[in-house]
Image 1 (cartoon, one colour):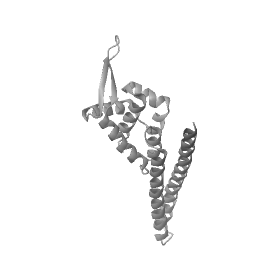
Image 2 (tube, rainbow, N blue to C red):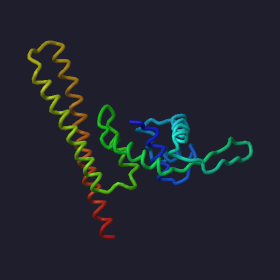
Image 3 (cartoon, rainbow, N blue to C red):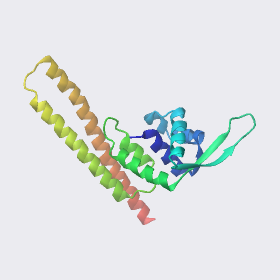
Image 4 (cartoon, rainbow, N blue to C red):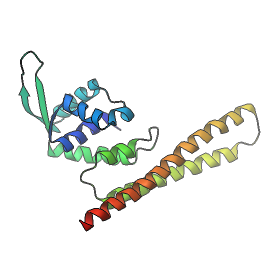
Length: 186
């Protein structure tokens, strides 16, 4: 997953027009920087790459006294398409980082509750396949050697992580359904 690009595109989609510093402030304000560990240099690098790819465009360059120039950007149609692709990858980005679904959901503004539900169900299916593979591996361990005992110990940790992520995604589905139902009544 190209996390920095996705976060920059998602931020621009939410903010409309923004500078790299504005994006960083948005991430910081919404605590997104804490769990994605995106730093300012990653944001500026992503902005440069996205501009070269013609997925964002410069809107303005502001010079304010002794401060460095501030360049503001806006997402283009090509950027919206790239964001859709990156968001889909993130919705299914279960391993090795578990926050893929979370970051995709956090920046969602256009996907419907039904689409998110479909992504969630696919993510749960992936998790179930991984859990099944872990169980088969544990069953295949025939002796109780130190190495196999240690292997089981670490697999148990992974199993718990996947089970927790599965539970959170199921709760996210309910949250989205409730939010959608409230929106339809209003």
